[in-house]
Image 1 (cartoon, rainbow, N blue to C red):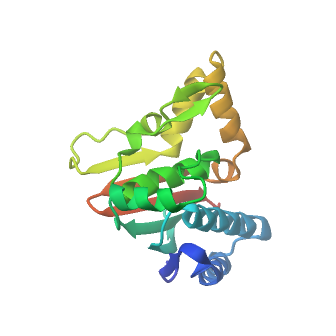
Image 2 (cartoon, one colour; image 1 turned 90 degrees about the vertical axis):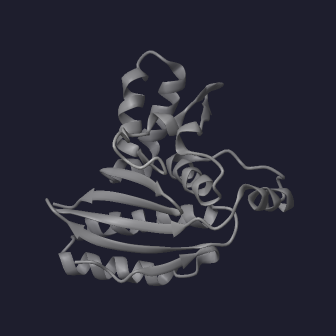
Length: 210
């Protein structure tokens, strides 16, 4: 089953339609109340992340059932602006700079935002934990051998695996792991991926429901 593709945009446009599609999907595949609430939470977090991205743009949102009792929530947008225009938006904002990305969804939003504005690749994105910068983008990058050079792929599961490898012995990694542990989305979703190919950015949240 696949829901209708809803156009969602900054300012909350399309938000209620997206919630209705999520509820229709939950009803159709027979999710119980707890699983349906998790689906709604993932939808809320996804739309909230999108609304936090600088500038006006739209994206398509939909959910589809997949094999092995999973569903996939999609958010797909096209590149719309270059770095100079993005900088102009920052200059007229109250803070005159990009605020540090908060939480896992904030960081995923930053990956998407930089892709939308053709600023950078996911691998170069970093965050400061305990006074130490960590390359959270690079740590979530997957092996892209054999794929087009214009394509890159970031995975929350890959990021989680890399953080867990060092979190016992490193304060910065411990703080990053604590952020993961506190994240609603990271605890609900099986994985979150961000793929960028040409001018298209596609985020997919994968969740097992049975």
